[in-house]
Length: 526
Image (cartoon, rainbow, N blue to C red):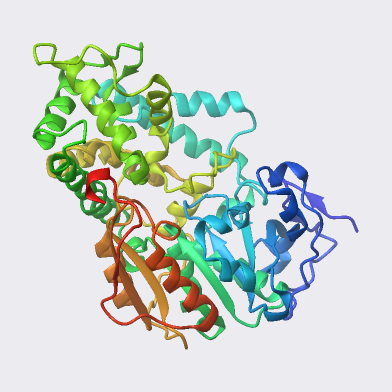
């Protein structure tokens, strides 16, 4: 009997007269094929033969495999030294909702050459994301544009709050109407079960894995669900798993205060210490004055015609804190905005930051609320809230968000209101309640310590979260990094060397190891 496709593209649900076979104990092997040419853009021609792609079928619900199946899209970059190949190295970029499919093409930017020699790098789009069976809440782009267009990124006035609340409610209704049965199976527990099937399907007895940002939640979940199947697990930019699955509002508040606000405060301190920083000269006070101006007076128009309102400036600032390479251009932009808002000051007559740089920075503003791998554009799916609202319990109503935003703004003046209008607004109206998510315990012991990296000034996953992760896991070793930015692998020779030795030889660094980035955010501090 033929299967019926319903609800979600790629979701196969058996008809009533055809029961699906139970999930086999030994999963079928992945069948690798040539990748579509457009997926390998930027790959050197000589390396193209290393890449292959696949779609792999997994159960919609691993506990009830008869409910149907979905597809997981994978890309593999084969190990260069097949004779001494260790196995597969699975990668996850975070998000949640980040597309990991093309991560193998960035392997040389992240890992030491010997890692590329000894491992097949495997990237995949988790369930609900991009090329895998996507979770989609809208039938048309016009509906999506209408709903998202009514969500003010930083609601301040009563009308802005009311419009945004109505838009979030409509979003939840669309998701309940169009997302199909996949929406009930989007927790990190579901993804960890997929990952374990993929591990077996590529022929690995134990998992070797690197997860960034939210990917650390996936890694922590995996090692506690399957502790005996973990070989080498690296978690870079860690969440606090226990807090995340028990109190969504408090998790997000701590993330905002100890992450974004702390990173900005230290960025402004470093700026004042650098004579070449364009925003130097009581940078903290100037930023506060600029923020107050944007709130009380209104948008600022720069000489090139760029109009910057409060939401854009706060969004750009939050986004740039992820990437120290943009710190100097951000300082120039902030000074230009400050000069434009203080015409009585000795403002410069010409912009020092180019129009192209301004546009590039402004384009990053929408990314501030989601920890997405920077090479992964929005892929027209709604997996971000689907995962977060499955994992993170929010006991507030959406009507309470204005009060939460007011409170956070008093506590966290630069980012409190901005980030309160994220998950605390979306999850209370999400159609799935009491999702079947893994909520602990977190202390199951793995044979090899899980290797953690945590930046002191990480905006999205504050350093304290990495310390908590190291305490909560049954066997872990934390490497601290005196660095700005979100995650560190690929930007520090110290961490990259440690990661290579760990992945290949299971060598663990000593307690209290501290690394530094290869490049400091301001040139004079090298």
